[in-house]
Structures are given as C-alpha cells and as structure tokens.
Length: 374
Ligand code: GAL
Image (tube, rainbow, N blue to C red; front, side):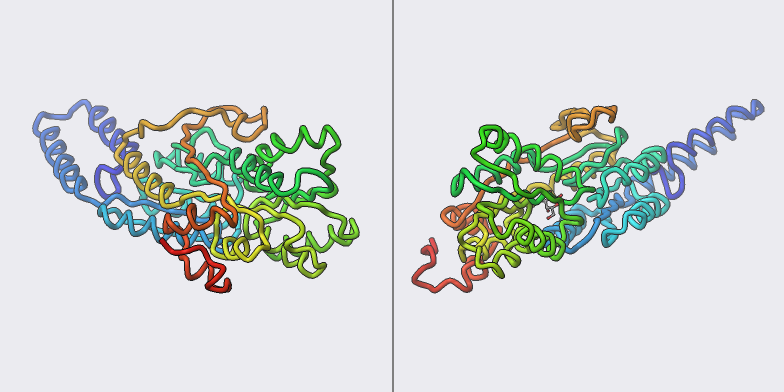
C-alpha cells in the first residue's frame, strides 16, 4: 500500500525509526513530521488505485476479451489498469511484472505463461508488499494473495463425459494442454477420473497422448497429423483440452475424412469452437462465463490494494492444486462453476446467455436448420 507518492509502509517505518533513533527529537519536530505525513496521507487517499494486469498472450479469444473487460471495470471505479502482454515469453512476463512493481502498482493480476517460472516474480512482488492474484491459471507460489479460476478438474470430467455420451469404447487419443499451464494438469486429472475405469476394464484403449505447447492451434494440427499417421487413422474418439487445440486436430482429421465421425472435445465456448459444434465437427465445449471471473478479479484486486482480504476465499495446498507433493504451502482460492455445451444445448447455454452471438454461431447453418430465436 502506498501512503503517498514514493512513501510505502516499508520506507515509512524506516523514516519513523530514523526519527526516533535521533533521540534529540523535539515535540516541535515530531509535530512537523506528523503534519507533513498526514498531508501526504490525505493527498494519497484520493490517488487512484493502480492495478497491473500481466497476460501471457492474446492469441486465444478469451484473453484480449478479459483484458478489455478488466480495463473497463477498473476505469468505472476510478482505478488505473495497466495491461501488459508477454507473447508467450516467460522471461519477458517476469520482467513486465517486476517493472509494474517499480511503477508503484498497488496490486497485480497475472495470467501466467509458466506457472512455475512466474513464482519468482510473485515472490519478489510480495517481498515489496505488492499482492498478486493468479488469474485463471495457478502460479506455484505460497506468496500469492489468491488464485481465482473455474473448477478446472470439473472441466476435465465434463470433457470426458461429453465424449463418452457419443462414444464410450474403442481407441482414444488424448490431447493435453500446455505443459507449462497447471490448468492442463487439472483438466487431465478430471478427464482420467472418468476415463480410467473404462481403460482399466479394456473398454477404452489410449492409443496416443500428447500435450500441446502454448495451447497452439498449429501445433495441435501437426501433432494430430503425426498421430493419425502413426495409428493409421484408427481412432474412435479424441479428448482435446480446449477449443483451439480441438480445431487444430479437426483440421488434421478432416484431411483424413474423419470429422463428424470421430467425437472430439474442447473448452472455452469460443466463437470458432461453437461454430464447429453446430456445424457437426467439434462435439462439445465447456462454457466458462468469464463475465463472472473478470469482475471478481477486479473486485478482489481493489480489496487487496486497500489491505483488505476478500471473504469468499478458501485455502488449498499447492500440493493438491498441482498434484505435486514436493510443493509446500497453501493458496487462498475461489473456483467458479462450468457447464458442458453441445449442439443440442448451444442455444440455451451460450446464445441465450449472450456469451456468443446467434448470427455469428449459426452463420453457415441454413435458416431452416437453425434453432428458433426466442
Ligand atoms: C487455460 C484456460 C482455458 C483455456 C486455455 C487456453 O489455462 O483455463 O480456459 O483458455 O488456457 O485456451
């Protein structure tokens, strides 16, 4: 917290210690100092809260959308929001976070490219008295102010259930998310909770399992092309971990005449993902209403900037959040609900909620085949 431009709690204590160490202080001097400080405090009380927001990248539909919403919501309450994007560059993101601390932000919201590497930046910010919120993706530091996201294990369960609804046996391909994104670990945990019993019984056979760096659509295309070659197109279902990688895999499947025959999951209910679903290529997605997560992030950021602690947080251990028992410490968390969406539920879940536009999602569907607009 900043008392006044340049005066933080840390150096304010230093000033007081120097004064009282002087021993020869007089009541007059003390009065003058307290008068000056109180003036600063009054002045600073009106200084706008400075919120830093560090994004790993803007490649995926949701991130620029959430950054714009953060800026809009922050400005509406008189806060200054500083957005920075690291374009998947792990070192650049840590440098950007460090610079935000030097610029005197009061709190930082971070969408991490690498949840392990970003811990260094979080620890340094915490050392300087600046709270950090891990936004949607965990950062592996016990010095986080909090981690807010969706129920990512339930995302994985929902993806697996969405596939089994269409195909509950045979040869399955698993496409994991980015290896540096702890969410991908949680999605996979949920997927395997549902799939493992069927694998153990031999009803399902996992014929390929690869994780897609940076959640890259083009990487997913290449990976799926190689998998299809290796298994001679003998695949019955694909559990992909988000819409972008699903759409990359669908491109590879289309070239082999497999789309519409081999179910494939996704996540984020992106416009491209929802279009693919109503057009019969992607099978399902998971709707996560970011219009709830972003306001929560701004609300919590303001509270932390004022030295307050949001009530609705619950502690989780880093070990249970990462499935890594070597990690010690706990993080206050809040997780929002998720909803599976497929062709049948698209209108009610995604369109009626206003998350995606009817005319955009059904653009290439003949009018007679579209669901009626309410
Ligand atoms: C994950 C996030 C997903 C998805 C993915 C990239 O961290 O939880 O919702 O956005 O990144 O598509």
